Image (cartoon, rainbow over all chains, first blue to last red):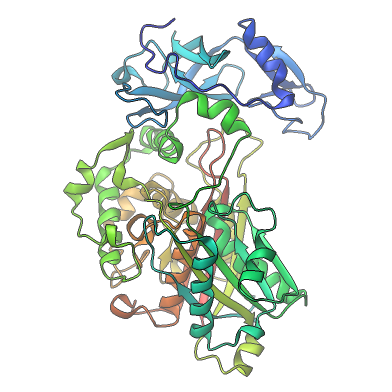
Length: 138
Length: 389
């Protein structure tokens, strides 16, 4: 568990799509799996029912590094999560080494320290009972 | 090149209210009655309906036919346009298409939403699965991500945003249909001091969701003349882009669909961006106006703030912009919000903008923005060029 995570214990459970199940099964084992399109050689995130490149259903699931950089960020002062006194927290768009972007909380990082381009690594948090991807400074 | 066979002959807007307690159908009824009066048209002339989807009736899979029953309309064509805030401009062109296809001849184009009174929307998919768990603060959160990236690439000048906020507020003061809660003078200092929601988005960067409705009548130019229409506007150019750069995993998020939609609309109209006399951009957030100015070619990418600081966007300035207050200062009538920008353009083209009438009302550009995809800017972009007859 991270030192700075104002959302700890507050994240709502994800409402899952059927074709996403391998992602959640991987997450339960601490593995970050991405869909991979063998024809284009491209990864994609969030999970889709088809390759967004070809429209075909020959996607593979591959475990990825979980290393990336902050593409952008926003510090949330007014939260949609109805908890009084919740401290400001960071939502970031993280660009993974594999060439996809993931929207996630940046934990273990004071809100004034977040910078575009900073190196980050995967850090699992809980959303309901599920493992959910977050990131922390690398 | 531009076709002038289609005419818009009437327009109306219901006063925007916060938590009005009214229903979708009540608002729609007032908007239709207003549009008929504006066009000098009898209800039985209407044989088509194009309506924007809404939050207040979002669970209704039979929305357009049930709405038409409430309005007493027997129709030969009807549809719901689910492009969100781009639905109003999109509906005008869908109406024109249906008329040109011979399906109908006179279409009521209507947008109504009582989102601040009743919200039956339930958007899941990637939102419920991957966005809600991160606690992102809805649209202000997404625009926070977009704004910080823009600032990183180009520099985002709060003074430019403040200038837009104040100009639009000045216009809302002149628009009796703007929401009363917002019809109070605003200074740049007050904008800059407004509370941070999702950095760098301040409260006064955002729209306030309210209730409202607008309608206009679309028919053939020939029929409009036969009906003795007092004034009309032609939709002479249109472009639409849904899911811009969708297959790029890591696009530049400051590039918006209006770059494609705008080029198409201007080409169809046979115009250059410098020919546009007034600009009514969809404004859910102030930075959206700047991004659209860049995408449409009013200025180069990254030069939007400089452009804003160099021009006067008041109704009597060098590029009149959102002269009804825009949604940010008139209130956003839910998904009908985009119809505010459209209806104000029509009032200007008809010469009926009263104390805020622009001098040269020969044409206008109206844009739409609808819904927000995962980690990008916005999903639907529309650009409509209108010309006064």
